[in-house]
Length: 334
Image: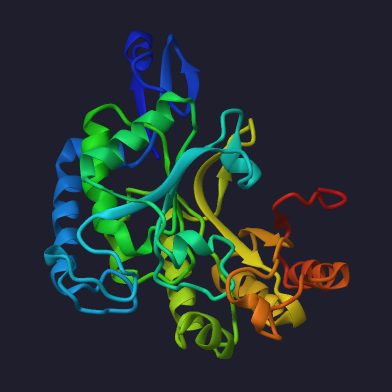
């Protein structure tokens, strides 16, 4: 976030995120991308990202198809992003929701396509409509107008160029709330570097530690190494999650981890990695809501919900690793 000191009448023009009174003025924290727009850096970043589509290497799949010409690779997405839905979401992590919800934009298709995906119709079947950059910009602005405290892109990894194009237009039209990058953790570091100073909040999944499972369920035998590198880059850019006195996320990294049947997600190893190689102050949501969806019902490793005991063991493993900032869990003495 950037700090600006402005006269009160100027501040009123911004749906600002956080402010402090200083000698009759307000010091306002605005999303980092505001400065990139004013300096001309963001439009150039968008152009650089779009060039990646010509022989696509936006995500780790590196399909090298010409998406500018409408060709599609693993993500089945060509020149335009496909939006499945958008709304104020009140079911996200507490620091993202605030009073008015997280302005969530669900991007269709996916660069992982997990066989057990709980949004199977969106990620596998591609439900949604193609949007031009101006239309995606309009969606962002509509969510801001509804009072959402952030714009939350779900499954953005394969459409980073399209998001940057739209953000330029949205920022020029007054967008001024933080952006959330809500991905499956299968992100290319080189692409993430184009987002430095653009996204203030990163919220990746870390799905699996043992690569046998993402190979089986996502056709991604390099998932662990890719997620390790991606999360490291995200943390380098934004650091640990910073929350305002009112409990709203301002900037930083928030990691999601879905507990899977039989412990196959590798919760203990993932928690140790986060504590030892990222930060012991990493904010993590250890999620219990797994249920068999999509093709999971026919897979013996996936065809049941987790038990209370399995979830309790996952929480205990996370705490043993040294992580204490768990979403929705208040520790004694904290």
